[in-house]
Length: 168
Image (cartoon, rainbow, N blue to C red; front, side):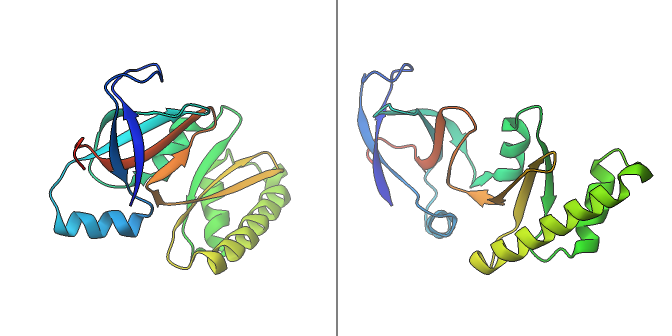
């Protein structure tokens, strides 16, 4: 675990500051939960700010699929794809999520091939993770872990999970 500086103020300026510990991996969080009953909190910080702000409690890691849906700009679409999905599985998912039209048959098949290649590459880097894919037209593919203990949104905010206690 690492430590962060937290402020009780809501504008990034120090007010009632304290240190707390935050998790560096989902595995570390899961191990902690097996041995402890301490409450977990979400902390957020604006880019460039030194201090974090406690914004509430959480029961476990961030669900990155839910975060991607909430955070995605209007011109993105978000689908959930598992690491072991085949080209056919991905094609079926795309058909369910897109307004399917025979005129786009080849375009969607090509897109499914690109996603399958991207998942294969990511799979070799992250053996045990399930991925969320977000995409925009034909030129954007991003891969996210299914769960995380920290992330940066598409704007200016960073989020991390740590111990709620000031005496952590």
